Length: 133
Image (cartoon, rainbow, N blue to C red; front, side):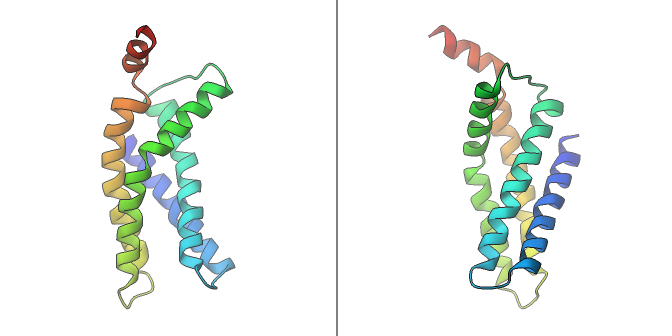
């Protein structure tokens, strides 16, 4: 199920980038598109991971916001991997190459992200241990 959600989030991310590039093609348009795609994919993936993969129910908005911030922080390195691949592939002489780079980078990133979220973001045992200290 995680793989299916990762594919869905990748589709949303790349789709948002594509739409962004259609709407604006000026200076720094790729960077804006990458940021917009990252944000949309991040939000969708967080909701799906929290509910269906890790089956976490937050007690209130404050706890949910805290988990989302931690989820986002865990994604910083993986986002840099994704962006690095996309930007590197963008140097190729094919317009669609950046999207292939994005898919490769996102795939690598999601493999790493799953482990980080499992061990830290959605680890109930870790939170219980931290509360006892």
